[in-house]
Image 1 (cartoon, rainbow, N blue to C red):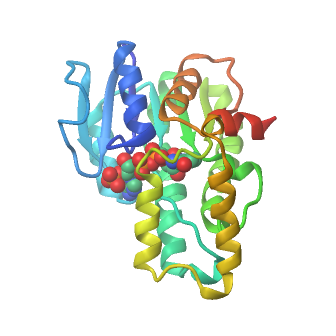
Image 2 (cartoon, rainbow, N blue to C red; image 1 turned 180 degrees about the vertical axis):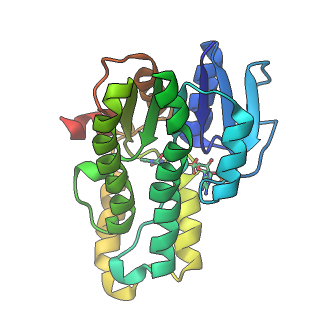
Image 3 (cartoon, protein in one colour; image 1 turned 30 degrees about the vertical axis):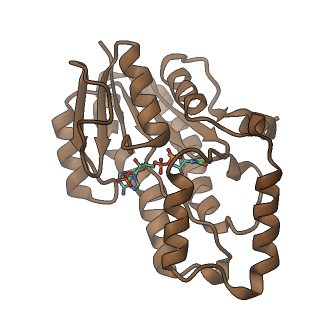
Length: 249
Ligand SMILES: NC(=O)c1ccc[n+]([C@@H]2O[C@H](COP(=O)([O-])OP(=O)(O)OC[C@H]3O[C@@H](n4cnc5c(N)ncnc54)[C@H](OP(=O)(O)O)[C@@H]3O)[C@@H](O)[C@H]2O)c1
């Protein structure tokens, strides 16, 4: 039986991916900052562990407790939407600590076991926003584009050890907690600078025009993660969701 460790399984894409792997008879190590036993269906193949990807000791303990794993899914991430002028350096650091450094630290924590066993897959969930520049998303996009670059480069040095690295690029998924969490953080930081009011309006107006058929659902992302984990011939970049697939061309 193969084992997958997924970060950020308390909601959204991570939760959906955990369900998909359990349904396909994988052992799932579902990790969360605050472990909860009630959000995933009970299964003898499920282990729930505490993990904060910004905390080195938390990473060490979780990887040790997980035992040997075959696939790591770096899904944990936080969002942010604001002008550069409306983004404090504390927020910039928070985004990079979780989205970028957390992904790199988790990858480092599993690579020696993958290399020694001559097998393993690291799947990094970034975003379709890295495919096209968008206003108010500079810092978030930078934190995810860095992961794309990291993944594509590291994949080359890991090839001789039969270790694969893949990128899943979800489109906009308004149904997960992601937008609400980002919105609370934006409000807590004082909202958008008044000078950018018209830019903010045009960004929200474009989202409202987006038809339901053009958005991403958690199941699209879970399926792309599944493909990256199980199909060695899958491409390096897997867009997930109708909007992401259209953008990727
Ligand atoms: N939704 C979208 O529109 C969208 C689009 C493209 C890409 N993405 C990316 O997809 C991934 C999943 O997003 P989602 O939509 O499923 O959002 P979500 O429902 O908000 O889930 C994000 C998960 O990340 C976890 N997390 C945040 N900080 C963490 C940390 N320091 N350590 C460990 N876990 C942490 C959260 O856990 P807590 O419950 O502890 O906060 C939560 O489980 C993220 O990387 C996001 O950037 C999202």
